[in-house]
Structures are given as C-alpha cells and as structure tokens.
Length: 210
Image (cartoon, rainbow, N blue to C red; front, side, top):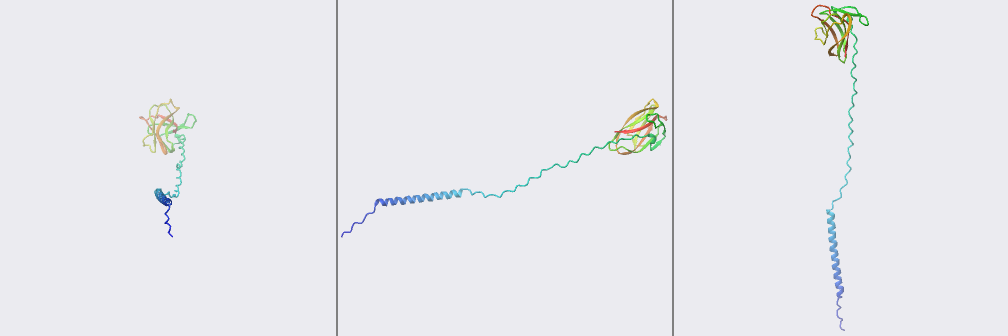
C-alpha cells in the first residue's frame, strides 16, 4: 500500500498561535514596565512622617501681681502749743511780775529793760514746724527789741520783735513775729535789748503757731 502523504500543518492555526504568543509577550512586557514604574513612584514618594509625641506646653507663668502698696502713712499732727506765761518762766533776769489789766486777769511781767532775759525749758515744737510767735504786749515807749533764741542766750535769733508803743502800759495788743521754722524740743530764751537803760515793754503771754 502506498502510505498516505504526510499531513501539512494548518497554516491558520500556526499563525494564530504565533500572534497569541506575541500578544502574551507584549502584555508581559507591559506588565513589567508598569510594575517597574509603580515601584519607582513608591520609592520617590516621601515616607509618612512619624507622629511626634505631643510637646508638653509649659504652664503659663504666674501673672505678676503688683507688690503690695504700703499703706499711706498719716501726716503728722501739728502740735497745739500752750500759751507761755512769762511770770512762770523757768529763768528770769531783771524782770518783775504785776497784776494785769488784760482780759482774763492774772499777772504780766513788766519793767523790761536792756539786758533782761526770760527762759522756758523743754518747749516741744513737735514734728510740724512752728513758724510764728504771737506775743501779748503793752508799752508806752518806742524802740527796743525782743529776740527769740533756742538752746542758749548767745545763739543767733530765730525771730525778732521790734517794740512799738501801744498807747499805755496796760493797753494790750497781740503782735506776731515770724520765726525760723522750728521742730523738736528746745529751751527758748527771750532776750531784750535797747540802746538806753529805759524800761520799754510789758508781756502777758506768748504762743507759738504754725
């Protein structure tokens, strides 16, 4: 018998197989390309920042409170000075007392002449300065002076009364003398001066004022 001729392969099927193979290879290549692109993008993307622990905020500084304002101290109280009675002075040189005709009665000192003195110990002027001296005077002579001194009859005067006539030895008037502002405790001297030896002044009382 004659052997049948070998069968020829199906040309269509062979070509389709090759197309399929090429398509698969193309798809595989595309898949590799896409995978490589994805890996590159993943490597380039920044890693997510690690969550940092919360920073403990410092407690607010205590608000500065103004320092306590010291209480305002009360101003010193001016001293109310008593009247100084010349007949009761702690020291007396050349001066005599007599009954007075001035209001209130009592005694005054008189026959005051050049070189006479009066002394008042421990006069307390207090913390607020005395600035004036009221003097109750009478006289029928012109001229002469009364000088106010502190802590010594030879100290500089802090004030001077220039004597003028009042119209009679019992005709009384209150004169005021400006003095150097004075505080604290002092011995007060009144010294009397006149160019001649004649008597020129009577005194009833004296009082320092502010």
